[in-house]
Image 1 (cartoon, rainbow, N blue to C red):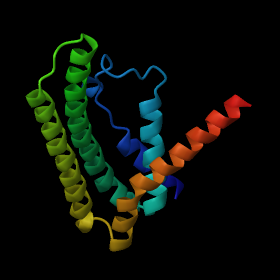
Image 2: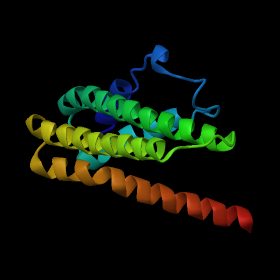
Image 3: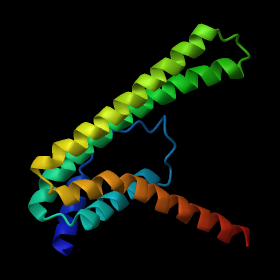
Image 4: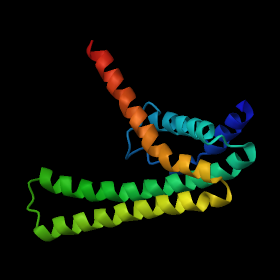
Length: 158
């Protein structure tokens, strides 16, 4: 199991620094890298991946995360443009708002499609149980992280 975990982490950590946009996202404490490492560790453990599976799974997973990141970046750009106009007290037309809402909805649908293709595309690599665990993984991890953050916040208030 330890070997599988080490192989999984090393495969998932393959990183191209040219892909980083450090100017846009403030990640001075390496939170993104730590989060990615934690996800790899948790996925390896939760899915009980064999080394052969991990070798094939994590490159696909990285590509999937990259696709989602690009979609989210587009959504942020739309929001950033609107916030800029609001902040500068520019007049925003109804058509601009409608257009932004429609674009964001299209991007949300695209996110759902990308998630579905990724999950269902794992049928050649994962068994049905592993696929169902993978499908629920994101919600469970986010829920746990939210609870952990709330706990930390309460501890700091004491």
